[in-house]
Amino acid sequence: MTNGTVQVTNDYALQLDNLDEFKDYRNEFYLNPGSIYLDGNSLGLMNKHSENKVSEILNDWKTLGIDGWTQGTYPWFFISERLGEMMAPLVGAEAKEVIVTGSTTVNLHQLVATFYKPEGKRTKIIADELTFPSDIYALKSQLMLHGYDPEEHLIRVKSGDGRFIEEDDIIKEMTDEVALIVLPTVLYRSGQLFDIQRLTAEAHKRGILIGFDGCHSVGAIPHYFSQWDVDFGFWCTYKYLNGGPGSVAALYVNKKHFGRHPGLAGWYSSNKNKQFDMEHTLVPEETAGAFQIGTPHVLSLAPLISSLEMFAKVSIENIRKNSLSKTQYFMDLIKEELSNMGFTIGNPLEDERRGGHICLEHEEAIRICKALKENQITPDFRAPNIIRLAPIAFYTSYEDIFKTVQILKKIMLDKQYEKYENKRGVVS
Ligand SMILES: *Cc1c(COP(=O)(O)O)cnc(C)c1O
Image (cartoon, rainbow, N blue to C red):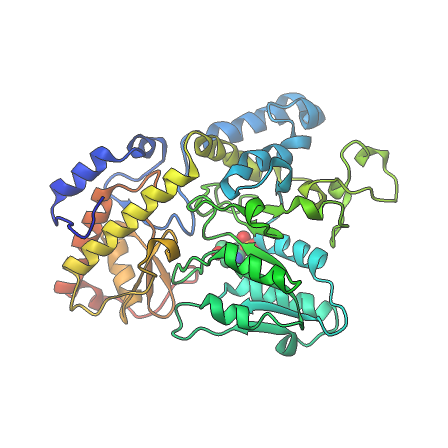
């Protein structure tokens, strides 16, 4: 749509907005008038139907008490499966391969506890050195549970430039000492999108299981986990999926692994018809549902219902096209308007390798973020020098992007950032 011939005018942004097939969805979200929200990759905004879903569930509790489990508008006993089914198309899985449960980190623990089976000299796990810390902590603690020294048994594939990890470098580490690989779909800082299909094929050629953390892609980028034969996946629902703070996460298990005993079992791992038999011998469900542990956090899944209903109206492929167009427009404007001001675009430029956010590097990033906030723009800071800016298909307009770049330019020209302290907040 922009083709390197971007016009630096507000009118042009409005023209693009006019052609935006997602433009009407913007009205379905709570946006603060006069402000611009570019942090949907950390916490997606609330859609206006979410409140109703929370109220419906509270009302079921109010009027039905315990019977809400089977007779609620969304019977709570089956709600995790129902949402898993709604989520499945977003990752290219069959309905039974996805369950909405737990949290990202808990699901990672569950999946590693299930799929990491060290044997003989195959004891190592591959991750990468740019991965989100929680994933690394979880992997190290799983290794320690097995009595292994994480320094020796966790391979963190190195980055050449601190931004990207080359797939070839990951493949080089896939030796016969490796039992399991856990990688992000998209790196949380630079937004690099991995070639999931290729990495999966290469791992399988060498008899290694592989799973992906989809926190930074699910809801923005289509995946085809079943077709690619990915072994397992897990992701949060509060970033691109707009499920709300602390909303219940999701996991995917390839159906070829159904029947595996969950590493961390609980009564919700049970075959649903047998769960209330209260036997001490677990008969796990023959679906991804087997990887649930306990009672679903019903109130924390309520907003996700309305969000997934919205996703069901559009195609994830079109969301991706829209997101790519908006990140391209963002980069074009940055190149036109912010050159020679110390900025570097730190995300991959190619469509096939770019995630849903722009990674803008600047040595004054922290103070620039504070100035943006004062100008009613919400960015996302990642130490030491990254400003993450995520245009969201559903609710970010081209005009938002245009205005953001104009305000950034003014912040730099007026040196507005100089009045702030160079210190990050507790949450950034
Ligand atoms: C957001 C994110 C998490 C967060 O994990 P929680 O258990 O939801 O706190 C983990 N990993 C990655 C890659 C993330 O982006």
